Every structure is written in C-alpha cells, then in structure tokens.
Amino acid sequence: MYNTDLPTRAELPSSARLWRSTIIAFVAAIAILITIVLPSEYGIDPTRIGRILGLTEMGAIKMQLSAEAEADRRSATQARVPVPDTQAVPAPQGGNAEIEMRLSAIEQRIDEIALLLYSGVQAPVGQSAPEQQAEQTQEQSALAVPASRPEETAPVNAWADEVSFTLQPGEGIELKLVMQEGAVAEFEWTANGAVLNYDTHGDGGGNKISYEKGRGVAEQTGSITAAFAGNHGWFWRNRTDQPVTLTLRTRGDYSELKRTV
Image (cartoon, rainbow, N blue to C red):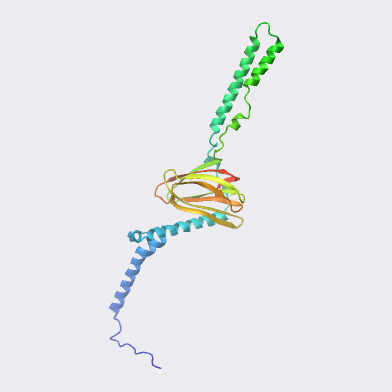
C-alpha cells in the first residue's frame, strides 16, 4: 500500500535548525509564563504587562477566592474557639451613664437621710412626734428615687458586643455569630480608614450559604437573617500593604460571638 513519499536526506532539517527551533520554543514558553500565566493565575506580574492586559487583577481574585475557600474548609473541621475576653470591649455604650446615675441616686438618698435626721433634731416647738413622723414620711416619699429608674433610662440602641483586631498585610480573620434559623442580628464593621475584602457566609449542620462578598470595602452596616441554625458571620482579609484595624459591633438574636479563624 502506498501512503506517501519518504523525504530525502537533503529535505530533513539539520541539527542546527532543530536546536534553533528548540531554543525559540523555550524562550516563547518562558515569555508566555512570565507575561500571561503568572499574572492571570497567581497575581504575579514582574513585567507589568499583565496589569496592562487586566490579567493581574484576575489572578489576585483567583488567589483570594482560593485562600478564602481554604479558610472555610479549615473552619468547618476545626473546633470553634470563643473570642477571648481580653479582646471584647467591656461594657455596651451607656454603661458609664448608668453607673453615674446609680451613684447620683445613692448620694441623693444619703442627703435625704441626713435631712430627715436633721429635721428630727430641729423639730419645731409644739409639734408632736406623730405629726413630725408623718411629715418626714411625706418628704421621704416625695424625694424617693425608684430603683429601676437607671435601667429604664439605659440606651436602647447600645451594641451588645464590640471587638477590634489588627490585621497585617495578607492576614485574614473569621468571626461568627451562633444563631437559630430565622434569627436576626444587626452589625456594623469598619476598617477605620482603610479597606478590607470580606465574605459574609454561614455554616452548620452540613449546610453552607454565602450571603455577600466584597473587595476593597471601608465599612458596612446591615443585618443577617440566619438561613439555618449554625454559625453566621464574616471572613475578612487585608490585601493592602499596611496593617488594618478591624472593628465589629453586633446586637440581636444570637447566643455567642466567636472567632473561628
């Protein structure tokens, strides 16, 4: 059977041509690796050509999503560690005002007792003891301060929890609220003048959900409605070249705020 003519020896490429073709292919592969593959896959752009072509940003997004997916995988398998007490902000807003009101009430009661004692010693001539006692009782009733008044005047909109963390460049952190299905929690977080990447999500009981994601965000205020019973919260990462301080404030229907990563 006839297929094709065999090439003559003169038609075969010489060793020099083969070496030259190999070197050209190697150089082309290195150029493609540096200008296209590294920027688009890993966000590494030594020549800055990837930034011009828009490949560097695509690579940075891929690396971020990969790191956040790995963080979610680790958080789903490791034990949950409660947020240390040393990192929680001590009292909700309005705590100092409540203490001052209690001290004011105590000082007022002391003044009342001193006034009553002074009135008993300096009772007017001719005033009987029962009349004096009745008058003192009326004064005491008029000046008495209900014990529940400080609690009634406490701020209604105070945050239940507030925590702050400093993230170094490339560092991430995950904070979760333990919530029942349908529970609602309000939140407010800020990067204090800087920006952070974030992923709002939940997990628990074999369920997972992603609520929202953002890149280069300075702050956010809103609420989370738990789609199922479990842990619902945020993963932040500092993609800047400077340390960033994250502050989170929360309140609502949850049993615990804890750090998982």
